Length: 133
Image 1 (cartoon, rainbow, N blue to C red):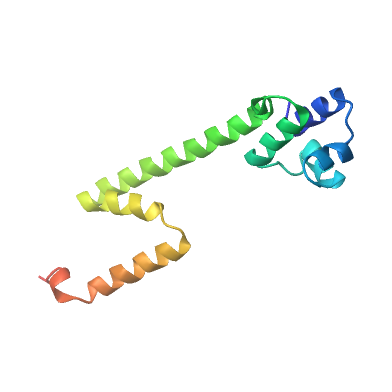
Image 2: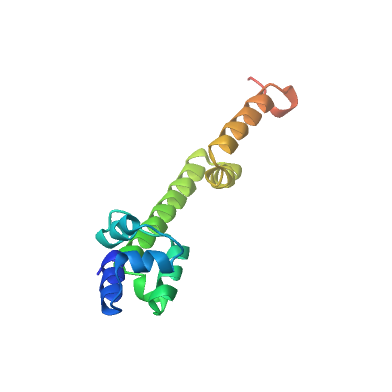
């Protein structure tokens, strides 16, 4: 069962309408509740905790296989990225490359642009560049 299906199932079991649940959540619209229940929108963890409190159930009941599967895919993607970074470091046969790539992967877009600009600046400083042979 999806998170939305669980919300709907428990809400109905509690003899509560979407409107009543929305009111218990501090004015969430009936349309928003409907979007959660149909799976069009997934509520954030913080919201799931509030829904669980309003329905008087443990919030972990809403952590579905879909949620766990999504997190596992994210972890797999990170592991694959880490493996690719290690391979790139070995390909350059340079101990700094792997660490630089790992650090770079942690940056947001603004940070990545800044890192690139700083590396470009360093290539302009003779004491930091390789001598031509």
